Amino acid sequence: MRLTNFSDYALRMLMYAASAGDRLITIEEVARTFKVSKTHLNKVANTLTRGGYLKAVRGRSGGLALGRSPEMIRIGDVIRLTEPDFALVECFATGNQCVLTGCCKLSGMFGDAMASFQNTLDLYTLADIALMPKDFVGGLPASEASAYR
Image (cartoon, rainbow, N blue to C red; front, side, top):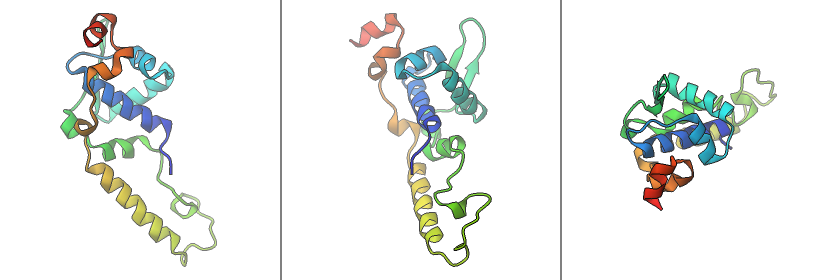
């Protein structure tokens, strides 16, 4: 199993926002920090904002900030929001055509594994994976970056 880039970028964006504290972050600085597309990050930010994990401040000096405290953002919830599905095998997906459905024992095993995966992610919050601002020097504004070098 592999998470999508969308989920990866969502976690990175949340980690970056957590490291910024009260300072608003921008899509541009996150894109620069992680060397990813601003267009793709806009979609990620929109999803995280709709989910309540980020809040958007509009206007000339606007940006993004965490919508909840890092201790209240469970990693499992973020992954469930950002992953399109958890269909590890065909019988988990819509339109299943497998001839073994009904007698195959793989679906139970994979179902247990997926439940364990999600339960483990639910044990962790953004506070558990937060980094320090100095870990993101490439994305900090020049005036702040010099304080961490």
